[in-house]
Amino acid sequence: MDELKLESFETDFWKDVARRKTWDTIIPGELRETRPVTLTRELIAKFAAGVGEDNPLYFDEEYAKKTIWGGIVAPPSIHILLMFACTNTEDWMRSPGTINASQSWFYNVPARPGDTIHMRGTALDRFIKKDRLFVIHDNVFTNQRGEVVCTGRGWTIRPQ
Image 1 (cartoon, rainbow, N blue to C red):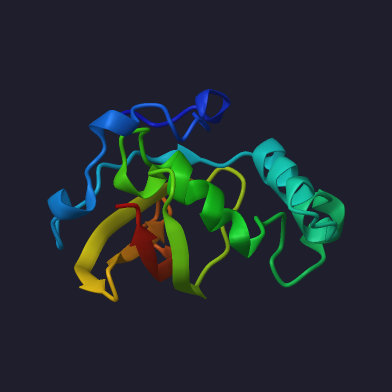
Image 2: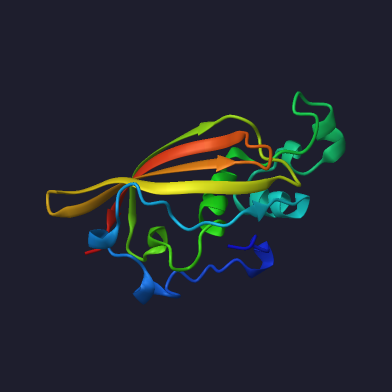
């Protein structure tokens, strides 16, 4: 799949809902279809402002150069945007009615302007507990050098 231009990032979670996998068709171990996303200073600043981050590390190059990071970095929580930006509108994680039951994230190297982020995502397991449909999923984000930016594992409760 081609690299995403973020100005075309689709935020309508109802788009293509009829073509998404349902809980009974999610296959543990099957890789999700993803595409790379390139971060820009503008995107990082817009995301940071949108989530209420005002740390100059995300906006001010002169300030950021004087830190241990040596330049602007993205807020760690940018993985939230990347998880959806790296997938298409038919991805099963975009299903309306999905509930985030739990998640754990681990951060390794910061994402920076100019980094092209790749995501490897898969369902690890799916099961029924107390009449609820659960999926355990795993996501790994790497940059263009193959360095792991972050990894995450989550549990979602799927719509019936």
